[in-house]
Length: 94
Image (cartoon, rainbow, N blue to C red; front, side, top):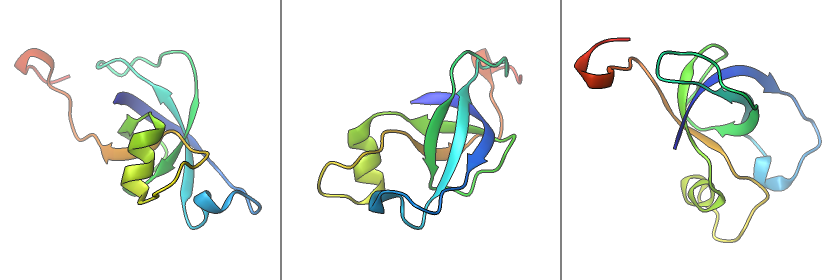
């Protein structure tokens, strides 16, 4: 799982059927202190995240298939599985 920040959304009227009725977001990995790391990923939102939210992203195809209920391989890899309220590394609030 990867800690990420939602940095945008994607609107697509024509897409693979595995993305039907899903919200597709752009996420960028972050350090626990909120510092953005390099790279941007596309992730299907399953929890109602919005731009600016810090989220947990499952980034392997098998997890995405299980979470979205697919029984066969689908062309998707990353899924937003949680919205982070707070990060307390070593017991101290960041």
